[in-house]
Image 1 (tube, rainbow, N blue to C red):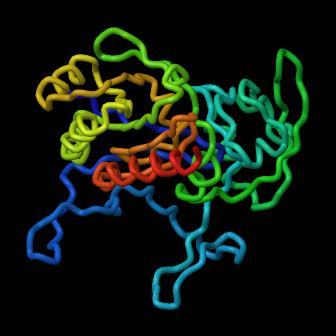
Image 2 (cartoon, rainbow, N blue to C red):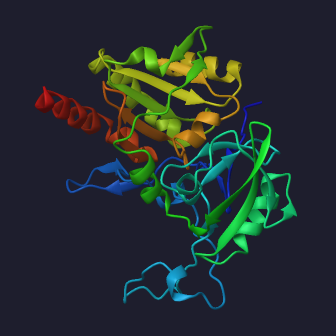
Length: 308
C-alpha cells in the first residue's frame, strides 16, 4: 500500500500540513487552441487561509481589494519555531522571527508559558493562539540543563511567500544528509560547486507524477546540475516509481520529513534551485515549478556567469 503520510509542521501558533491534489493540473486552452497544463501553481497547492474572526482588529487583517467581497482574514499568531515531535523542545528557529529576535536557540526546551507548565507543542501553540498581537510573554526555557526566562513579543505569522522570501531565498540552503534508494547517502555540502535542484514529491501525488518527465528531461539536458527528488514514502514504493518512470536522477528518502520543515514545504511538488555556492535562488510550489525548471536553471546559470 502506498504511503499517504502528511507532513504536519507544528509552528508555534499554527499547524501546517503538506497537501497534494488527487488529480493532475487542469488543462488550459493556449493561444493556438491547444490544451496545455496550467503553468502556475494551482490554488489547491496553497495553504488554506485561517478562518475569519468575528471582530478582527485592524492590525490583524490582511489588505483587501475594493473589488474583493470577502471579509478580512485574521492572521494567526506565531513566534517562529518548529518543535520536536511530542515535545516542547525546539528543533528549528525561523530566522528573523520573534523567537530568533529574542535569542531563542534550537535545542531550547520551553518549560513554562507565563508561569504555567507546558510539555507538548500543542500546549504552547494554544497559548500563543490566544495571545494578542504585540503582547509580550515570558517563556521559561531550559538550555544546557539550566533554566532561564526569555521575553518574546508575539507577532503575526507571515504568509508562506513572505516566509520563503525572508527565510530562504538568497540565504544559504539548509544542509542535509539523506539515504538514497540505491543504499548510498547524499550530502548537500558535498555538492558545493554544482547547481542543485531539490524536488519534494510523493509517489501518490498526481502532479508529482506529471512533473517527473520534466525532471528526467532536465537531468538529460543539464548533466552538470544535480537533481535530488526527496520523498517520505516507503522505500519499495520509491524504487518501483523510479523503475516505472525511468528516473535518471537521485531519489532520497526523508522518512521523518525534517527537511520539509527546513525548506518550508507546504505543497507537493515543491521545486527548489540552489546555486553552486549553496544559496537558495528559486522556490516554486506546485506543478508549475517543474514547468518553470528550465527557466529557473537558465536564470541561476546566467546569474553565476555575470558574477564571474
